[in-house]
Length: 443
View (cartoon, rainbow, N blue to C red):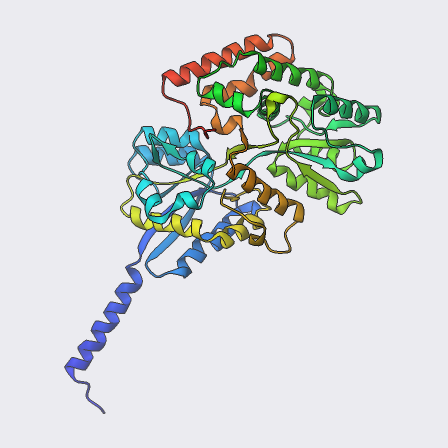
């Protein structure tokens, strides 16, 4: 039997110890995200983010922990207790603003400068995370409002997409003469749908420039152009533009208005970018479909644009013991555009569509060409400053709730548009006084 010298023996033990400790010495980073296992979200985030990041390096171990129920409340409770995950998710800027106010988030300003994040994220989206002149959150997803239409139906009837109010109303009348609904849509199960339409008309009638001025306090919401916007929406709602009547609009939900559009009951659909899921339902039929930015209805409306919205944010917990490692995770996400595209593709581009600089070459050949064209066009237009504003991203909480919750009272004729906007103005003044305004993409 060979005798192993003590020096060799201890060398082996020491080496083994070093290897074993290095294997367990990875910095642990936790991230809480809402759970949606049934839709495949949990598996997608685990595969494309957690596992991909962990296999890309040997120093940090990322764990995504999926929370059932109201994860915003779960996160808030943890932050109040001085604990919680290293990486904090939220549903949007309203939550971030409150977390910043409470001192629960770490400033990302130094990391943004170090890693060059302002060069990777579209400027308007980057600025939604800036509070008190410092970056505190990164956007996980963006949304906008679009105009989908049955292209085959349009071609059969010789219809063209409208470019002004006269063409818009004329087209709606022609569609109704055919026994069809101009637009498929409804609010059953989601009354916040009202704010989609209100935002559309504010941005296409009053126009983004005026909306911006009202949000920053240079105009009042009671000014004539805003009254005109919501008076026109009321007129069109009562004329049955959406699902045939106001009563139908209230009774119709997602499945119903999806079927309206897919079965030729409605010629068009004004909805968010999540409407691509509905439009692609025509692929199983003989009809083709198209999309476009919303038509501008007045000269004040400016140029066709995309309303901006961020759906979901990522931040670093101020109580994190390893903020630098958490920032490395964020930087890896922003630096791996191909991985993010695969992730959002797995979610049918309805989630994790990060507002980065996209080009046509970024997308593989198997992506729906219409969707690819939208992603590229959105990046180009908004990157050049041509955009409008969604209510759910830029309105302070009380004004944001009022814009949809009290709209039914206007449509019922119980209060006037002027009275409605008078209350909206008061809520903005209150938010401004209490320093509750959210970051607004400048013009």
